[in-house]
Image (cartoon, rainbow, N blue to C red; front, top):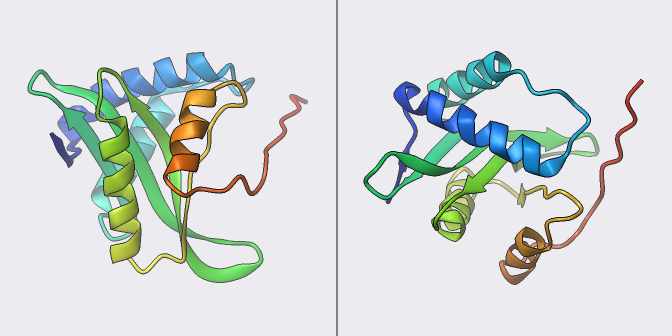
Length: 141
């Protein structure tokens, strides 16, 4: 079942963020305390922030976190995903719930990101109507 995340879910979500971070291979180091603060902020601002968990009865095993933002070229509201992870199902349900929320908030578009090597996530997004619009490149300084 998908449900709104609570502050009690934050340790489980941070654990999933750690697994997501490890799977991506990002050069940016992860700070669990920063992640927990960010999730707390999103949960506390339900109009602008959105955090849902997939819970099959044994605690959260998936999550999707997002917020509403704008782009540098337009003031149209955009839903921006900050993390998406699901173990043992629930990923597609989380994505659909996120898109429903974005529509309810009047967003022009919804944004998702995937690591370059995650073809499965890219296929799910393409099947859900997403288009590849840009890629991010990172150089550690």
